[in-house]
Amino acid sequence: MNQTKRVPSSTQSADVTVRLKEITPRQALSVSCQACGAAVRQCCELRAGGIRKKPHRARLLLAANKLNAAALRRPAKDRHSTAAR
Image (cartoon, rainbow, N blue to C red; front, top):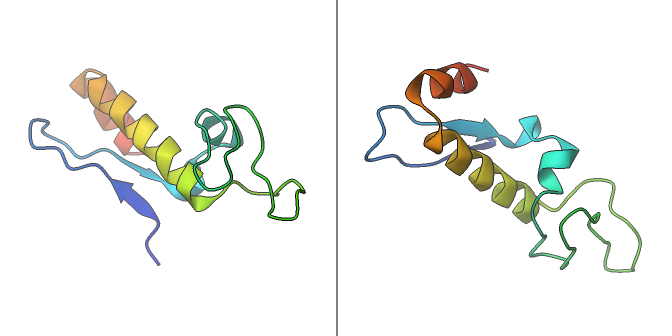
């Protein structure tokens, strides 16, 4: 299963992609979780009330969108070095 989140770019010359596996825990915690309602900088929760070991997929996708948006705002030469990683 391909776990790449692509941001379509009609005005930019290059697509910027961030793989979900490449998102660090700190980056995932930079957005709130829509699945469990965890706030920014708080870990995701299980339905039973415990702490999840990994963030929800929805949170990872939000973090990827945030990173892609930030990458598209950077100058083109920086964007190409980020996309190659």
